[in-house]
Length: 272
Image (cartoon, rainbow, N blue to C red):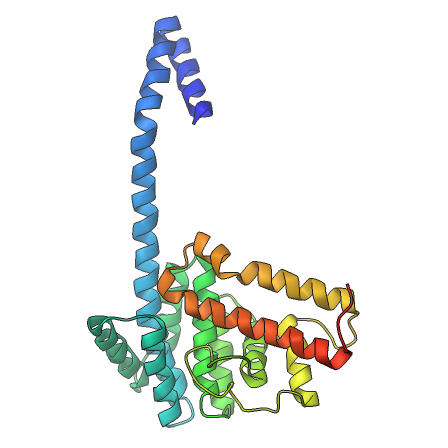
């Protein structure tokens, strides 16, 4: 704030000497709070628009993803309904979400256009993109298997969001590996039901952390701490994540921690 007042004073000085300097400094001092409030209102409005688009696109795309293998299972419907509770949707928002889900199941649903709309709305809020993909993967994981058409659609969605196949693989590994609580979208049973201590579950744990099984203990711990720092719900809230979506972020960090703890057990502890 002081910097802008000084700039205002210097401009006034150049225009009308010391009187101009005093006027310029006072003018900036008086206007800055107003400008700050306007900027805050603009930011809040934009975040609200992203949230609205998130809900509409999330459930519409979820409907398309669940229908990708030809039918929507009861488990997939249960995940969608559980997400209503997780996002604390009021009755009106629930009905809107149901309409969006049904819209996504229609044969003429334009998946790419829907993803593009959401990508545009969330251009400055990448945290929403991560949660968006997390929800889609959890919906597919609900019935315990991934159809090739569903996986192909996930990759298509990720590309539309500017994300990669690695992001899809990471979330799929999270769902397969299980973890405390329900699936990322409210599904139960830890996704695909894989034995949490099996060799394949350990492979998934390394996939979640983004390190090879040959990584040393220091690299494993470093990767874990980096992921936890990037995905901590408080840090995401500072970037615009609303409280209603905090549960999704918390579920992701729980699964990251579960993956790390699985590696710890397999190694007999991870040394610093």
